[in-house]
Length: 422
Image 1 (spheres, helix red, strand yellow):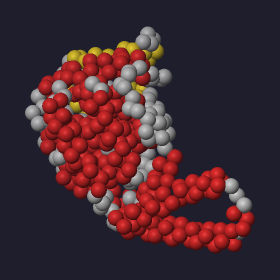
Image 2 (cartoon, rainbow, N blue to C red):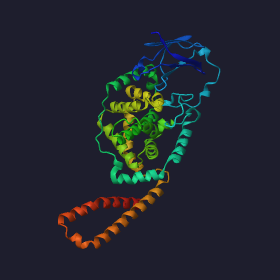
Image 3 (cartoon, helix red, strand yellow):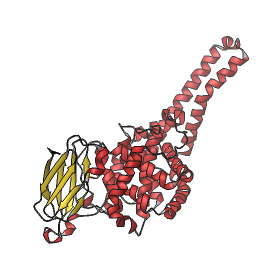
């Protein structure tokens, strides 16, 4: 193993930070990416690569696992805890507010700026309540009423060209996914007490529901296939948890956030698709083994993120949720939330999004109904002028003609109903 790797090492307040550059880094070898740590040095060995790294401070001996893996740049980042007697003297509360799964992460976000990744880039600077306020402000600025109105109305005509009535897929893991789950769980077992010591599961489970709904949306609009072009951004942007590191207090909050964000960020924007996503999730939970289904959906998110700018979300949330589901999930409380969701869905579905979208929607409806009525009048005049010619047709042709008119009449009726309900 003569091949060496490039590396850099530095110190922060509580850790030694080691960054390795490994050519041809392979996701399949993630379980082998481990540092053997000694008091003043660490050793990396992953055939054919080898590195012996001297450290500028005493660290806690043992094994260190990757904090971040960047497959595009072929870099691996490790954070090794310093020995207590070598910690720098900066006050610990300088790390700011905590974030991520069960609020267990602190300090600056391990994230490089990207146009594809819309995320609160410095969660450590803001409290959970401030993050929620910032999220609502961003949603209001990003919402496009015309896009929403056009999609909402077109949905009544042709479902936006989507096939939305496919039966839910039973959870079935590929060999790679099964292996990856084992690797993730084995990696996290060293901190199993984090999951077993959770006393209040409510915020953790509500965040999980938020992520699962975002995955359901992407599956529903991409034909249950992972779309390399947009699955990662769909899931990350629709989930408030993955975008602004927020925490929810009730299932109603989760549903309202999901409806708002699914009508703001993805390509298809209508509350009707959002409702079908919730219905799909409820059906899957009632139909399949709940733990297996949750892990299956989380692995879908993991695969969508792993080679994109969203890979950081696997570190801060997805891996932890996979281990939580495997080791410590509170199924009784989750069942209660599912029951609450069934009761809340009709109420939330009937509410406005809060963007003032109803004015634009009613404007579009008025324009469309006016166009339909105009077309109907023109058609009547044409029929009157050609009455003698039309009378020569057979009864069958007449019946066929009436059937051809029905689609427009149905759309018009739906639009009028929307107009009256508005």
